[in-house]
Image (cartoon, one colour):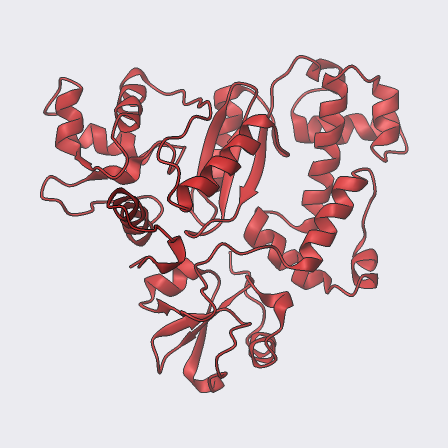
Length: 360
């Protein structure tokens, strides 16, 4: 899905260094081979010398290097207007926020739509509606009556609440009291935005949001756990977020957050082998197959490696070809090398500042 603003709008935004567009697009400068944020303090290039990208990964794949002034690969905080919208939703989940309400806040509804589509995989309206139903689901699990939940969720009738709840959660409200849920939370990182998922047992998903199969991953979560997938958070996701910060800072080498990764017996054995690969070390697909007692299962190991649903934490990036080449990686080879460089640098006793690493 192309969520880039119109070209004329992007040109005007980077010429005035508009912070509202930070993260919505990146500017590649043909004359220098560098890509920047629209807010880069460097001298603005001529429009004829630029091209636009939806994300930093696309600019990297097109051969551009990250700018050292605006650091487009750096973990980016949400724009203030996005923080304001998210805070409003969290403070009053039952509130129905219209496009008129968004416009009254000085925010262009189209800009909000593009930002949420890019970073959350849904429009702001869909996000707000999902959070409203997530809050309702949580209240029901805590024992609140259906009438009280419907009323506090902003629905005028119990029938309307039941219909909306059933469509999103997959069961009637009354049948959800003892039901598990996969909560989704979005995390910024130096290798691009990630979406994390966790149920009551532990983290079950960590994926790059720009992967083509991300929607299929959500469907897989629903089927594997027979549970709804909703935006929200729990203790496991809070712990994961904290540990990821330490990992990308080069100060954490071992994740301790509980993991849940159901699969076939062979797949789970492969993933368990991945978890045994030490920080800063690589193993070949051949070595993994031999550790499993089946040296001929190299291709099967590769397929299972590619189906890993918990990137970074279950370190499939540490598996390389027998000759030392990087091999494949679902998040892209530049991300794979970035992660390996970060670990090598920390292992060698150097300061592993992710913004200084070469992601190419």
